[in-house]
Length: 88
Image (cartoon, rainbow, N blue to C red):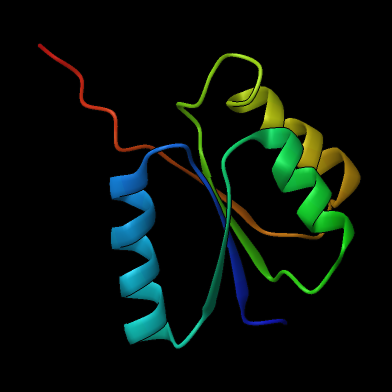
């Protein structure tokens, strides 16, 4: 499996923290996409072994984006993540 991780999020704080952790601890190459469309464009180029996808992106890009990637790349692992807090 390629060691490139594609992180799909529009949140710069998440991008910086996750990239640092993955690069330091997992020795993975981290690439970024800010939208579901950008993620699909990058995946078409190949050599991505894992997608971390912010499920709390906009309505068009969140869960729908994950489903679109899964439909096109059924064997590619996708981990939905979110840094959104819920107020109780």
